[in-house]
Amino acid sequence: MLLKLDVLEAIRRGEITLQFRRWTRPTVRAGGTLKTRLGTLRIGSVDEMSPDDVSEADARRAGFSGVAEFRRWLDTMKQGPLFQRIEVSFEGDDK
Image 1: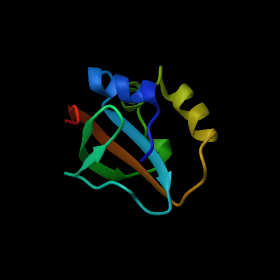
Image 2: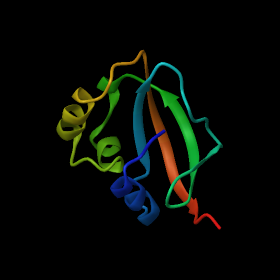
Image 3: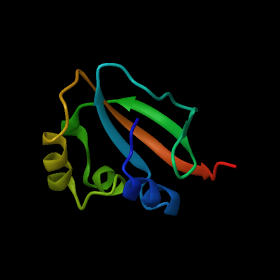
Image 4: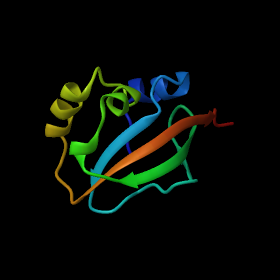
């Protein structure tokens, strides 16, 4: 799961706690970790869902101003049969 630097920094600050992905097969799993250039992320729950079910609260937790901005972002993403809601948190700096 590739994340932009500004998103990683917001996750580290606790401002972003969700990510959404469309893919053909998942690259993260619940309970796992992900090494990034800023440190290690903890992957919480990973739930398959429909993009139509993203709530205003979910959109804000993912760093969007609301569902409308989330939908504009989603329109720029590659199509994939699997859409997932992924809880993320910053675990710590890599040593």
